[in-house]
Image (cartoon, rainbow, N blue to C red; front, side, top):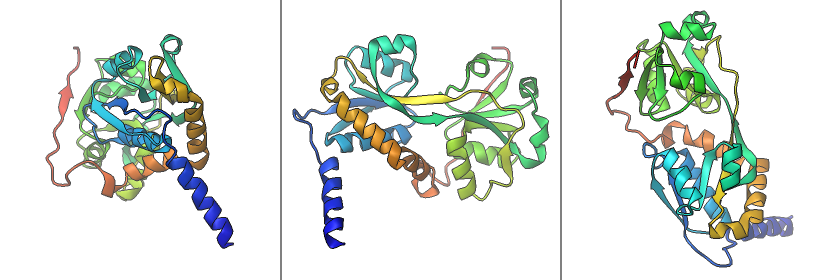
Length: 258
């Protein structure tokens, strides 16, 4: 039994400590609003599995995509595969997350949103700089309030200051449970019919291209071990929230008819 434990431990250490043949610092970037957010944790995990150092800056998503295309960044997470992007980036399959945006409301108001048109009479909390689904994102008739993070949106719904919030179900439910609000705040009847598949992608001009097979093995193993979902769940636990408990809730109202 002792021998088996030693072998397993050695195998794990060999995987996490296997450095690149030609070491270099991976260049990556995340959203300006979340410098220590979930994507940063995913990137650090991947770099650790590669045995590489990583430098993470902040910039808007559109610029991140541009910079990885021209080779100024090496790796990106949380990106969806499109035909145009496949021609300019190398996607490391399979997708590591399959996420769905969901609307949440007070349980007592659950029947108040049964179709898309009902959204026009609601005040909806959204995360600053986030994109959800095309119809909703471009619809300026819907009244939206931008806040800093999911926890603030939950607090606004619980206090009746907004009618709905929209966020990934995979993040919202664990946080609601940790706040003991999973009975008070529930999914609304109307929900968008879509799923976002998130990938890791690398620049075609990056030295990482030499290690794309190794990266695929790392991603596949992480999915098998449920490492990404574990990182996500831990990120949304209260002790790991990137906020001050006593900070003021600041938000911006996105007015109608813009």
